[in-house]
Length: 138
Image (cartoon, rainbow, N blue to C red; front, side):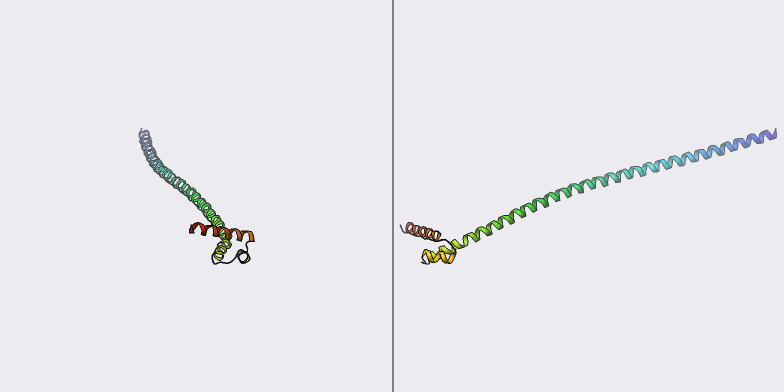
């Protein structure tokens, strides 16, 4: 019986060792699962922050792009207006010069030759100036 008792005691000891090893393994698995869950939550949070930042930056880039486009349109409009003003000023230069010459007492033929205007334009300007001077004097 001694052999049976030794076998029984050995079997109980091996069972305790197996149960202890199983409990230790279960403890480690739970701890690893908790750590994995914690890392998953952190990663999920980091992804949300990155996505939020990317979306915010995208919106900001779109806003800047719209602003740049508006500024470009305004600049083109201003350049067009400046070109039109320059052309208008160039068109008015001969008339302003003709007006000064007519005020100085030159006749319409001389003014037409010097300013590059037609004789009819110079005569009309002379007539208008004469009319204005008579209205001012009256």
